[in-house]
Length: 195
Image 1: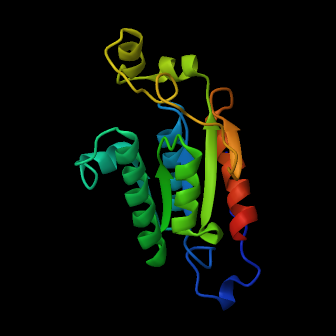
Image 2 (image 1 turned 120 degrees about the vertical axis):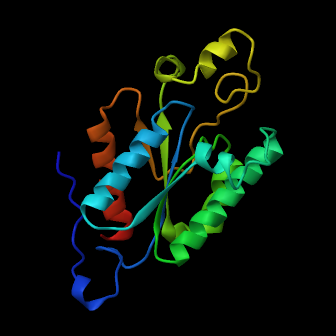
């Protein structure tokens, strides 16, 4: 499938990042194994194919490095997201489009991230995916450990995951094919950032 980022009408008259005047952050949230990383990598591939520089920040990756001193308490989860959003803002200020994939279960954190990055540079994508579908995709075995009582405070089961009330776009990643999800996000990018 071909994903078209619309050319700017004044593309030749502005300093731009690919077809974009300014860098921005696409934040993809959802339950564990709902497709966040797969979709983020798909968006990054589309950008790469069109020679648009971007970076993917992933929750697992940041927890192995910059956030390796954080646990999974509510305050540590909030700090994990704060650091990620500050990193995305810094990358944007250096003309790098950022695609972030984090569970982001609470609306208070979602609003804080939007405030840090700035609404004009921020696109929040919420994924909806049934827990049984997520469990069927779980290569790490976390859902099985929760079921066996070996893992506590698991988001969406024994820890809260709030409905999206401020998302720019909500996609059912449990039922829709990847190509359909990517096309919906590209359409939203074109609308919000006037690509």
